[in-house]
Length: 421
Ligand SMILES: Cc1cc2nc3c(=O)[nH]c(=O)nc-3n(C[C@H](O)[C@H](O)[C@H](O)COP(=O)(O)OP(=O)(O)OC[C@H]3O[C@@H](n4cnc5c(N)ncnc54)[C@H](O)[C@@H]3O)c2cc1C
Ligand SMILES: *[C@@H]1O[C@H](CO)[C@@H](O)[C@H](O)[C@H]1NC(C)=O
Ligand SMILES: *[C@@H]1O[C@H](CO)[C@@H](O)[C@H](O)[C@H]1NC(C)=O
Ligand SMILES: *[C@H]1O[C@H](CO)[C@@H](O)[C@H](O)[C@@H]1NC(C)=O
Image (cartoon, rainbow, N blue to C red; front, side, top):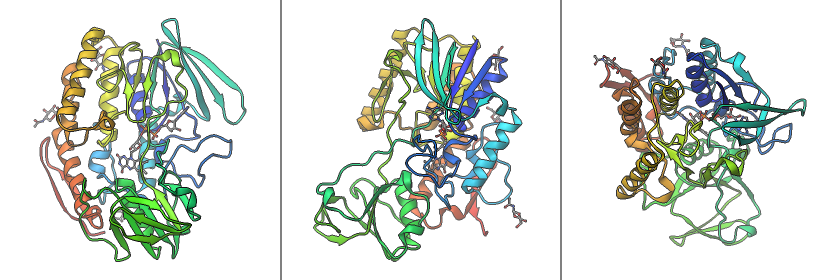
């Protein structure tokens, strides 16, 4: 059996580690020149020096918004000695350590961008292009694991009257540092993790920052810098610099930064793969993971708002139980039924069509389902408890939440205490 793993970010690395541990031959195809995916920083935005889309949204000075105690892999924790909230370079170093520890780098074909995945009888034919030599690569695999991430194709809504705006307009995907915004008036749209983090960073240097978001949905509390104000949604762009908000107020800006998220995008999937990819969903997947019609294809990392590395690990182990014959899959009908039940549960909880892969505070339930279905080691409850605690602190006190350090006491309990750097 030959397995192709597309992408060498955290998800691809966890997959390669567990697949190769089965003694199964696997090859990782990665378009970048190093491991780490999202955690690799580059000055490039838009397209890279080879003319391909830049993958990463990483920016200077990014510190993780989850503590290191839950950002490692279940049996390969992050060894750093000090505070809980690590910076980008440290996480990237950790992913390299992981890849070296499990001897994964020799499995990776770097600088190869996958251009097509297509069914070929009961196998998969994959085409890739070497970005440096421009030569084509093609090969046939029995199994394909798609680990290409989903924070790389930005969504930017168009504001009414946007064409009138003469300032700079960008998406957080292109944000690399706060330097360009010195003394500017900046409008940040969206108050998710990126919007908040970017707004705080830009406020350090800008004249004024306005953070615009749907204030009826989520209250973002805590202490704000004095030059950062919150406003409701934009009504329209009035002229070359003025933007009017739904509360009737109006301000002028030099720059608008959309922090309005990303959509799923797998441009290399041939139509015959039978995967339906919408902005906010990928179908038909069993457990958000296995292609129901063609189970030799899986996606690692589709769910979001989750302890990502922990999830990649348990998803990869779940899939390996299937690959190595320890678990057989239910019938297609049963898998569709299972997926449909999940959709109904979500609707009953008030989740929208856009939230079909959101886990959040329910991630423990998902992990338990994977563990009990495949009879694999579960993710410890303490991990999900820390995730929830950290997430609550983020929204309660964005300015200070990273000053806490977590300590795991046992499978179920933790303490967090103020940590002086
Ligand atoms: C700004 C930002 C901050 C974040 N902060 C945190 C945080 O603090 N904590 C946390 O847990 N998570 C955070 N995340 C989420 C983060 O995305 C995950 O932690 C994780 O890194 C995702 O891993 P991945 O392997 O799924 O995807 P990626 O890291 O995106 O890796 C995908 C890989 O696939 C490769 N690839 C893509 N397309 C192709 C192709 N066609 N051919 C070949 N290779 C391809 C890419 O080059 C890349 O290396 C953050 C995300 C962003 C964008
Ligand atoms: C951790 O803290 C110690 C003591 O302050 C310091 O010497 C060390 O360099 C720090 N380690 C890292 C990785 O930051
Ligand atoms: C903690 O969880 C692990 C993994 O599920 C289990 O093997 C171990 O026995 C648990 N420890 C305690 C004290 O319950
Ligand atoms: C699949 O195969 C063996 C049985 O031979 C299991 O004991 C393993 O744990 C393995 N699964 C995974 C996920 O490694």
